[in-house]
Image 1: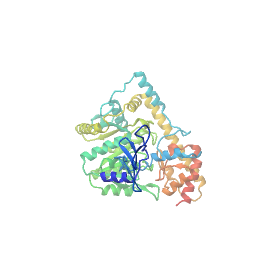
Image 2 (image 1 turned 45 degrees about the horizontal axis):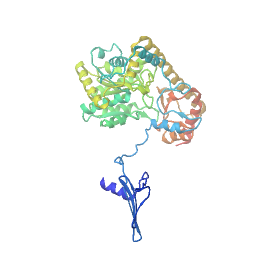
Image 3 (image 1 turned 90 degrees about the vertical axis):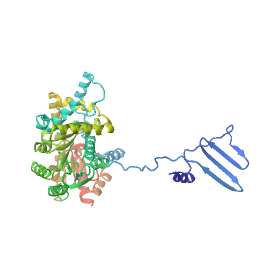
Image 4 (image 1 turned 180 degrees about the horizontal axis):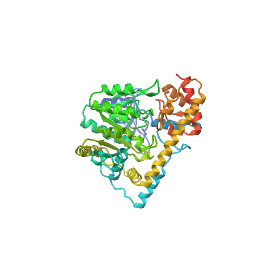
Length: 463
């Protein structure tokens, strides 16, 4: 380190260096030497027998070795979109719901819940490490059903987390600490942050086949084969509904076969449930995969998020649940999740937790929420249908675009490769992730014709 500092100092002059005089604003003259002084740094010029020598002292950052990180592949899309001045630009990168006018939407039930907080005069005191008790009760019941035996038998450990990302991170830390060497299998492809989460938790992972580019559908045989060949006791990361980024979910019959295999191999399923109620419009239908495993007595981890279904993106509200075989086990898991959370962020935020607790716990607000979710899910379904109709009416090549209608949730996996996705952005000003995923939640009915033209051009004219 010292040698690098000296090397830098001998070859560079700091651009921030300024010169100051030392005697009544005038430079000091002495013999053949002219010197200027500035604080601890000095700049000097010595003339001796026709030769000039300079010495420069430079401050070099101790953090010089930290490289610039690449932009986030998802959030970076929004940054590029903002920098584009085109009138026709579309941001289909980030998964956030927009109205038909492509504006952010705050649910009416959220506003009502916030008014309730003001009326009650709720304070801003610290929550316990595990979070708001009313939220933890509500979120477990929403996930599993209030009458689920696992809840009644106190076999569910629920800890409030920082939305889906933070909840997944708590689960990953639990795996790293108490299942040393265990591997997590992640679908190919998957949400862009899954691998980062397990990498940072030092949990090894590998991929199982999921997407079939030939059919733009589920590679179920490949998925089963890879889960079967995984070491016994592996963790299998599953998307509870509305798989991100593909929008392709297993059928109920396929879920049964997946559960059979996981049980046979003594694997542990780890569900990521980010879209309950937002995919189909039904809270129960979107939780069916998780409930199937729990009903069969399989121990599971489940991360939940309320970013999408309640629009609480910035509140960072979610939960990690561990459904185990006994109340004693659940108590131990709760204690260890709290132990992990304490040095990580100490305790979670209260605002979003109170919103969820009030909405789920109030029958009137709960029914209003379900109606709003159906409205949001319905708008996305209408956009999906309109996009399909626009593409099929324009494209006479005979290509089968029916996969658009078979997918579910806020995303559509277009099947476009990186070059084709780049063409969508560079030529058509359509901003999307480079894997070909588009967020239908950021699309309006009025823009479907334009998007159809962009997709058709990119698919047929770019290889």
